[in-house]
Length: 388
Image (cartoon, rainbow, N blue to C red):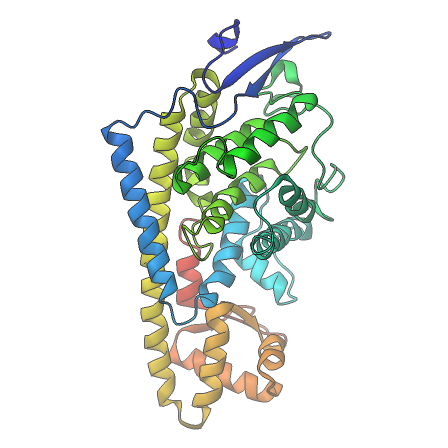
C-alpha cells in the first residue's frame, strides 16, 4: 500500500478507500496542470530544450521529403504493431503487411485485426482532427474503432466504463493499481479535456502531451484499450497544436523497451506526485525517438535515390520498374496481384518487373512459391524492423 494513502493527498491526486468485503484504495487524480507547478531544474530544462529541438528537426525533415506519405503508411503500421505488442498481441510488422496483401500471417488473425484497428483508429483520428478539437467525443469515437470486432469488442467500445477496473492482480484488493471509481471518471476526464484546451492556463505543447498521457493512464476510462488510446494522445496533441505536421513521432518502441521504467514512472506520479520524474522519462523518449526517426528518414531517402538510379539502367523495363519501386516505398511488402491491380499492368508484366528488381538485389521473394508470390523491399523492411 502506497505510504501516502493514509489521508495525505499528493499534488497528483488522492487515494480513497472503497468499502466492501475486501476494502481497496482507488486513485483519483487532481486536475492538471500540477499544483505546485512543475519545477524545472537544470536537467529538466535541458531535456525539454533537447526534445524540442529533436522534434523540430524531425518535422523539418518530413516537410522536405519528396513524398511524406511514403513513410507515413509504414510508420503508422509500425507504431500500430508496437503499441499492440505492449498489450500482448504477437503480430509483427511482416504479419500485418502480409495480411494486407491477402496472405496468411504467421499469427492468429485476431492479433492482426487488433493491429489493423489501431491503424484505422489512428487514421480516423488524424482526419477528424481537421474538423474537431481533441475532445471526449473524439476520444470515444476513436475508442469504438480501436475495439471494433476484435478482442475487447465486448467491453463497451466507445463508452466510458461504468464498473471498476484495475491493473495487475486478479481483483482490486490485490491489484498493482486501481484507477478512479466509475462515478469519478467523467469529472476527471472533463478536467483533462479542459487542460488539453488550455484551461485554466496554457501549457507548452511538448509538456502538455506528456502530462495528458500520464493523466489518461491514471484515469483509465475504458474497460479495455486504455494503453493504446493513451499513446495515441501524444501525437494527436502535437499535431492539433502544430508541433509536428505528420504523425511520425511514436513512443511505443521506447515504452516497450523500457516497460518497467515506464510503469514505475507513472506510479511515482500517483504515489509521490513526481511529475518531474515522469517528464524526464518522457522527454528523454521524445529526444531519442525523434532523432532516430529523423536519421531513418534521411537514410531512406538516400536508399531510395540509390535504387532509383540503379533502375534507370533497366532499359525498356525502366518506367514500369520505377512505378513498382514507388509502390514499394509506400508498402514494403507486395504481392503479385497487388502490383498488377495497383499499377494497372498484366500479371506477366508485373512478374517480369519484380524479377528485374530481384536481380538488382534489393527486392526479395519471400514465399518460395511459384504462384501467389510475395516480395519484400528488403533494406526498407530491415530498417523498419530494427528494435522490434
